[in-house]
Length: 339
Length: 212
Image (tube, rainbow over all chains, first blue to last red; front, side, top):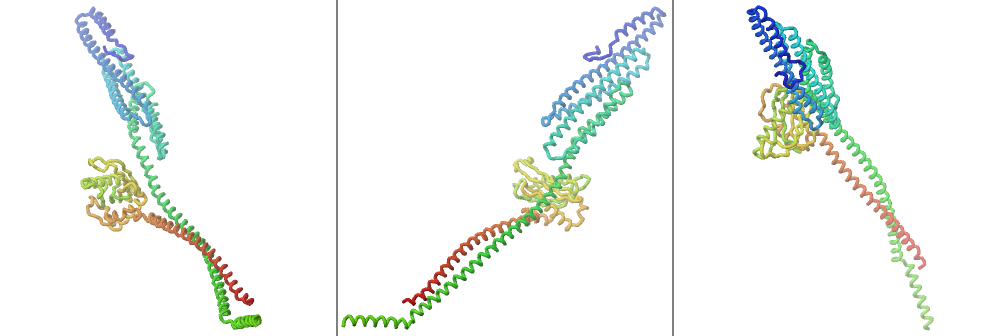
């Protein structure tokens, strides 16, 4: 009736108890009947209340066991999702929802187990045999163990997920230009906390189950920090982006100044070249000038000579004498030949 | 290369909303019905950016793509918001993507200097948005549409570039002059040779008439 699909380690001994009660009642009924009757009725009532308690206990225990089973199923799903996560196709929303749900379940189960334990302790103050009490404590311990292992698995899955995130972040920062020096720190900070809670969760007894619940409460702040590590990372990235921007502004100003300086330098070079060219051309101009002077001198000399020649041609008396002499010679010759 | 708006805000370090001290916006190139919403948008974005700029830091935020709160808004509005926070007084400029970043920040610097010169420290006590106009900001908005005005470095660079171009042209013309001078030299040497021959001929002419 109470076991359902739980692979539980407690056995339902209600039937045995009832048979023992019958036997006892029969053996007592052989004694003083009234006493036996009252005691048997009281015993029967006790038995029935015991049975009721036991069934109550069993019911709650089986509920808790069922819850733990469901939680572990969800956890396996979460583990699969977290393993599957890639850089771009990240089912973050699902993972976060699932983690929330699992966290809630674990808290509920935790409180249920604590309630069960209190209930069991309160019941143990009544007159119940040591078998029952040991049985109930065993059941409670078993449930606690299973819950603890579930929380440990949960924690492992979260660790794996944060590792994956860290890997993706590193890979992303390989392709981006922000510095990745600060990114491992939020994850490194979470590591010692995870180790501490793992160390707390390994032993089995009651006081360390209290530690275990403390470890689970440590677990939840760590998970909360997981959610917060992302905005922290972004803020660090923002700061890292702002410092390069300031540098960029200064660098651009420095660059502009250097440009101006190099431009001025180039201008100086250009002016020097200009001066060289102009001086060379000045030399050429001087040669031209000399050439022109020579030409002028030559032409003036030639003009003088021509003038002299003209003078000599235009006013040469000796030339006239020579012409008359030639005429007279012709006349003489002409007269000689005719006369 | 356009400045859309210039603002000066007072930033609290504790993170409450900054207070606007001066605002000059030029929304004339948007449609008439969008102007008021654009002004509000400018105010809101400048408050947000100023709140997030830590003191002593400069920051540029680039915004691409559509703003969908007005139905027929210009969907491809790319602009950059530059903000400079100096000891709690923050200057913000809305420029388009082509305005050089450096001149933007030098302009913001100038604005802050002007503001502190004209208003002294009175801005520290301001508690509400100031609605009065600051004429310097308006004329700054029109004057500094050309980034060279705002940034001395840019102006110097530009003038130097012009000078360099002029010098290149000068050198080209000097080279051409050199070529012309070379041809002149040749011609003048030819001329002097010819004149010399002419002179010799004339001299010979004078001497040779003795035969006749």
